[in-house]
Image 1 (tube, one colour):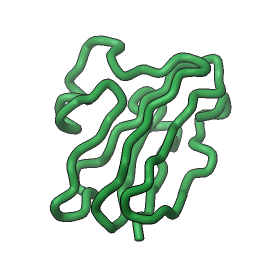
Image 2: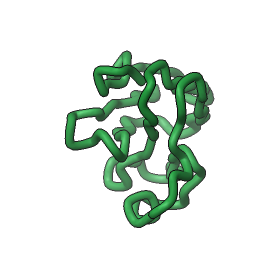
Image 3: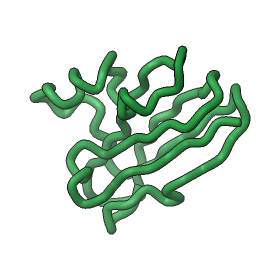
Length: 102
């Protein structure tokens, strides 16, 4: 998570069972939230702040899940497929990424 409102890298390929760690390296808060429609069949929803759905992320009025500089969020991917995710406050700026699980 960078100051230029990007995930770096924007795409990563991992093996099933591996964990991805997102770290905020910028001075602005960021989030990591899955796009529900992109989840592979059988995959659980993930989001910083441990929201149970994309709808809950979008409807939240709190800063729960916002990562400040130096904070991290981790998620272990168990189901193969492509997972698209976004940063809620910077989605309109194109802060979107992909995790490909083989």
